[in-house]
Length: 93
Image (cartoon, rainbow, N blue to C red; front, side, top):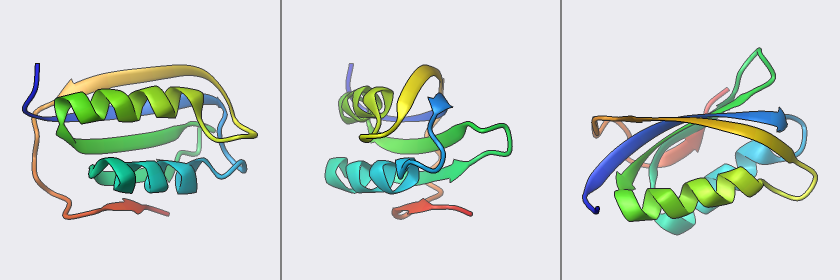
């Protein structure tokens, strides 16, 4: 299934202080996704991305692996209606 889609992912494990946000931003740019990544006070990383559904599935596969130094234990994904809110993909603080 293709077409524009959007997901919100909560990534759990050792995902803060390991370069996860920069990794997600680089990979999102490579895939052409829009949205953002941010650290949460819970220790999780949140990624919201929008773009082609097949591309987003590939992006999610990379997020499940994470960068070197990360240890992803779980990824909770919810698919949402595309909103077209972001023009690029960025790190939010």
